[in-house]
Image (cartoon, rainbow, N blue to C red; front, side, top):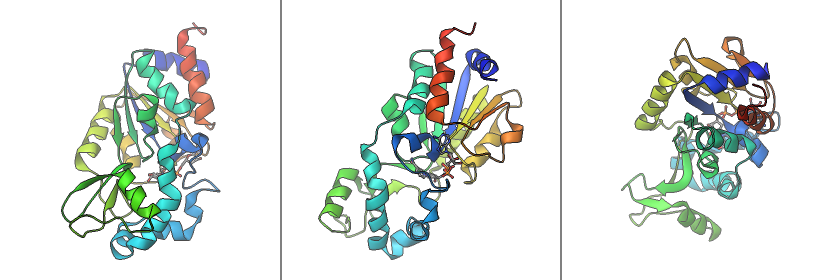
Length: 247
Ligand code: CNA
């Protein structure tokens, strides 16, 4: 199966990628829905919501500081780097729509990334729109203060919380990428979060679908290739074979 998949990858002109938390677990970031994922903690599920941010910002920031802020210091792994290599070494057109907020695709060198659920680089005041670097949020939290804007509002990280809407421009861009691609990778995502999982249904009928996820997903039966393996091990192997030893 791997050889046929390499062949399809070699022939691909436009590659769209949908990634989720599973692509970053090998960098040390836990996902949500694996057996030891963050979703097992009820207080986490209840705290990273829009409602909690606006009604109990101290509680929201307690979990944000504990769980998400440390992700700003994490390094990409072989899976992120293999996707970047498809562009840089093999000259492919690659566009990555990610559900992740960790910024690891850009850190690895991918040039086209749509961050469907936002990122950890900045935060903004919902009242006046002022933008802050995440370092300022971190500084306030380190000093045991709730990050506040000069106007008096509480600063909100630029991540999409449960209950928030997706950024419309980012969402349209990701849909267009899926429609343009002749090969689509879904990597490290349980494909249970809507609307991100509906992106797959935007694909062309003649495109190839490759799913790489440790656990089965609801789209496995529709896919041309399914690998229930670690992305950080499989993707470098797959991309590495474009060098030609199989042909
Ligand atoms: P999820 O629902 O937690 O699913 C992750 C999937 O990845 C699971 O089905 C696992 O089987 C699979 N997986 C775990 N490790 C690997 C691996 N090494 N190789 C291949 N597959 C693996 O996560 P989704 O992304 O599907 O759910 C979307 C949520 C999770 C989004 O809202 C994200 O913002 C959120 N999230 C993001 C991060 C991050 O930025 N790194 C971390 C945790 C959660």
